[in-house]
Length: 467
Ligand code: FAD
Ligand code: NAI
Image 1 (cartoon, protein in one colour):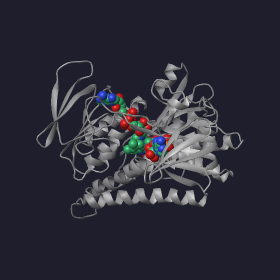
Image 2 (image 1 turned 180 degrees about the vertical axis):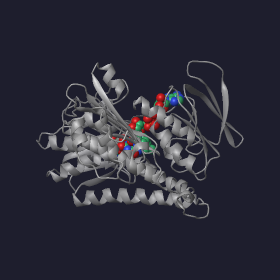
Image 3 (image 1 turned 90 degrees about the horizontal axis):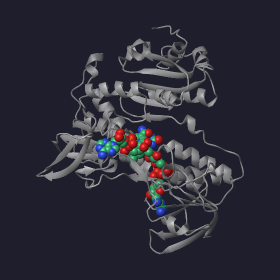
Image 4 (image 1 turned 30 degrees about the vertical axis):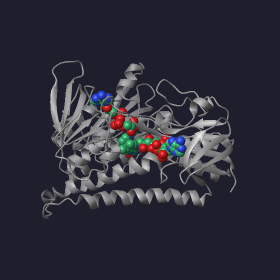
């Protein structure tokens, strides 16, 4: 077994595994160091995949309780949580084994253990099976991802006080779940346990949920969450969590200061963001620069300041999204192979897999106002869309923001049942530099939810047909 490769990747998450596969396709000899006992990183093991499996199962459980209105009579659905968690685990295993298959197919060696960068060209691995192995490569990619941001004074035990990882594994439905952070994780996993019967309270420091999203989407979704019986405590901070008997006492106060309130909870989910993970990676000794938030600094070609050492994914600046990491992994492999490649950071979609879903790409109205860009906005509600009416799923809207002079699409924001699938029409148009008029003139099948995209595009020019 050789210890010399063209490329060594540390971390087999979406960034690392896609980089390894693309580099192997391009003829490089590749090793990928991963310390987990399964490939796929946060996303496949404790992130995207298990959370979506539980969102899917809990959504069907919830829907099954409302079939009667469609004339389908069944007895009240009963929850078998261990089987649902087993369903989630099967989804994880199927995906992680899929990556293992792809590694074998592409002759990528999975070196099981923890990698330490020893400087340009060298990685030392503390092998899981014991001992060490030194790998040499002209190119090294750091793709070590991110970890849960901790709240000082609140210790995560993954049983009662959990991060997203523990929230994917709860052995019973908590009576009261208190979520700290009204961001993506808090609302997705809050939705899972809400649908399965927990009373969910979300404590958010800011005066709104889902920071960075379109303000109208935020407000619409806030109303929807209240209809779904979420309790939202906005502009509020948690100052402490104490164990009390079998439960927890959570102390909260207004973010701007004021009266303290104590809330009861059975489980607390800490979901206040994630931080770059570089623990034990040897960055200091190797002289790799990081920024003020501990993220590895890279240039436009994903190069660090150390020759032949690159970084991608959650461990560098940018949205912490699996597909952003993947795009960087592929582009980097192609650049290392001497091709030209790039990532279009202006057109990276974001999806929140709640019900309704929320999906967004490009600029928000606030971004455009801040940048002084003159824009026109076209909005179309699902209440006026035939398919949404037929399905009785009329919550939400599509909003298209286009340059006032050129009509070029600058941002699209959707809240609606299948927003996560619909957003890709907008991604395609934006990638090709298209205009709202282009969407307006494309034939959309009837009756589909996507017709709302066409109508929103027509609305940019004040000529929506069904409003
Ligand atoms: P990671 O996936 O974090 O992979 C890094 C890997 O490196 C890990 O496996 C780690 O064990 C390994 N590693 C670290 N240090 C070393 C070392 N020194 N030696 C060896 N191995 C090491 N994103 C989406 O786009 N869509 C979603 O629906 C979505 N859902 C999410 C749900 C949850 C609950 C969470 C927590 C995240 C979710 N994300 C989602 C975010 C997504 O998981 C991350 O953006 C993505 O995993 C980042 O990929 P990465 O390759 O940069 O790092
Ligand atoms: P987040 O950044 O989305 O949300 C964190 C929220 O916590 C923010 O609203 C913030 O204002 C709030 N907050 C911070 N400190 C607080 C405090 N002390 N008290 C109360 N509120 C506080 O982070 P989250 O939800 O933890 O997710 C982490 C990352 O994982 C995100 O960057 C996201 O990109 C990724 N992710 C993506 C998913 C998707 O694409 N569907 C799903 C889940 C995670």
